Image (cartoon, rainbow, N blue to C red; front, side, top):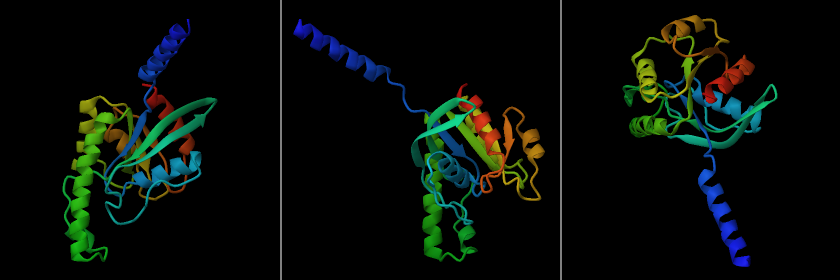
Length: 212
């Protein structure tokens, strides 16, 4: 009888191991300096009380994928758990000369460009492991760019649930309607990750997207 109980316990343990639900992954994607890392920090500060990524005015400050595990968002009596993935800015061309204007020396600029290129490749590879994606766009910039179309195209090809964060609405040139017109197939939330504007609507939409 004791042997039977041990065997039964072992089967239950194996069953729970194989049936364990993997942590869901939410990826933040977008062009350089759209505010992905600022949004990552906002989410982490809201729900974990700590920041996640380094933010800078220099393009490609985030040059490798960064993961923050076990974030639990609560809204209107509901909860949502996921691992947050902050990715390098997607670019169709990375030139070391672009960094020189930020007073970075030539050798460092070349190294940064090399790391940024690797980061873009890594970010695209990670798409296959995403359960949902937030595309972060700067709402003060024309959304009809090759980079944005490339990002949206990669997501559409993988049939990943997507929402768009039209960031920087605290700035005068912000135009959320232009982003809505450019990508009508996805829900768009106008917000400011830096100022924390409209984050409640952002989280509400996130619940809808991650339950698809």
